[in-house]
Length: 106
Length: 140
Image 1 (cartoon, each protein chain N blue to C red):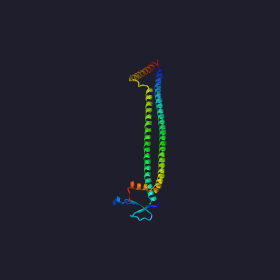
Image 2 (cartoon, helix red, strand yellow):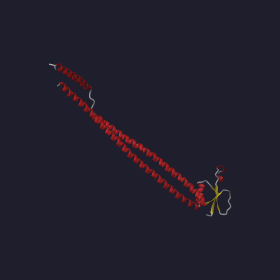
Image 3 (cartoon, chains in turn orange, yellow):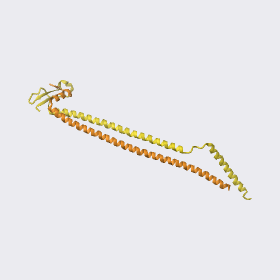
Image 4 (cartoon, each protein chain N blue to C red):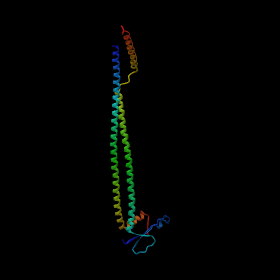
């Protein structure tokens, strides 16, 4: 009789200990899950932000290249115009030769 | 173009600026000095091409500088994103741990541990005495 009472007592003692341990394990598992979710969220957000930055960068560089080509085309047109103008304008040619190239007209 | 330029260009600077001269001459006219003879069109082409080359250099260098600026801005943006997101992530991780600590039961005081130890000994002793007593009276 006494032995069975002691057995029951020990059983409850063990049960309460084990229950406490499993609760702690559950909490730790929850924490690990939450951490995993935070890490996942971080990598998703970083991927999105990086992709957005890459797209922005590509657009900006495209704009720069477009602007460069536009300016070069404009310069070529201007150069052709200038050439024609100089061919027919002796005074202007003299002015450029003396002012820009430091040549003296005799 | 009837008017021709007589352009005498000295490349060596040792000869001095006195030799950097040109003169307008007409077809058939006698050239007053030795040198190279260009038409107006040729001079215009040299000048226009020279200016175009300078402009092209400037345009290309402007574009290169702008591209470099964008490169650095891009790299900065990536690092800024990383820093912001990591700050956010670590704040969340700390919050999770705070919550975990709050949920966990506080550490029990030591005297309860002592009580458990003493009661365990008493129960063990009681059981032993009980078993010994019952074994003693088993034959009766």
